[in-house]
Image (cartoon, rainbow, N blue to C red; front, side, top):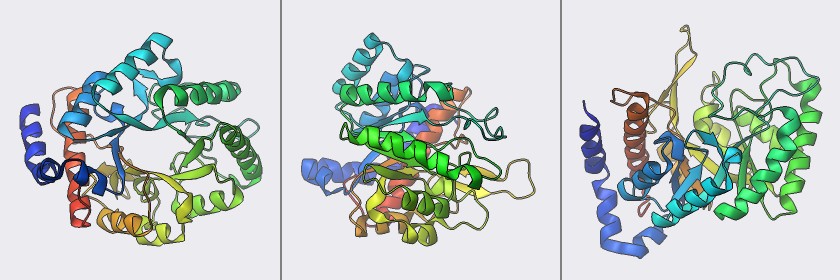
Length: 331
């Protein structure tokens, strides 16, 4: 199956959504309760190509920034930031947030995490001592890219985080307070390789850090990788709805007994009930980003970049299918 076939498949599958946009114009666009988005490097390391696909093929008005041209955001030169801004303007894309690797490091004084040497950090490699400088750089980049949200984590996962939870929360609180001084929001992603991974863990962390500028990047796909965890409805219904500030969309299935305990899937395939989740988000008045974080690489292609793009096309098609089944149009 060629890349061209994949693209034709995407256009065919997304035809209904495109027809709605064509018929209703800006009225249809405004009907979408969410900022439908995609993480740029899930499509391609070439930032302009990723923006072209997002805007022209996916019909998006928003994009989430993670790494550009093989560099994490904080590694970009001033000229590269200006180039990226020009590309965003060319494709009329606005930035949902900066998907940074803030605090995706080992916690000093704690045992070395088994996760730290093995995880894909998406071109990011910052030490603990560099985290404050990284945050200050991200704050400046929020001004450059016109967004008020920065994604973070809470350190590589410890076998027993309880003795270190107070220190983890102190660092998150400190960073949230720094963000609040700039009217920015710090988004903690529940990430299975970090110390807040599941839905129940997210509930506990949010309760411990009440700062209104500290919100959750809710990722049901990450939560479902925990055995017995049901992201929707169980986890979601326990989350404080007004503390959800960003949503990542992907899906997974568990593979007990195999080398890896789970496998990523397209958005409309797997254990996450995205139709129900989208209905609940709309019901509860959520109006921030719903962003595709593909991760699945089962699409066609002869190179990793081709597989990444084709998989994201298939996953975006599945995401829009779930939105349609949830009765949500105009996205």
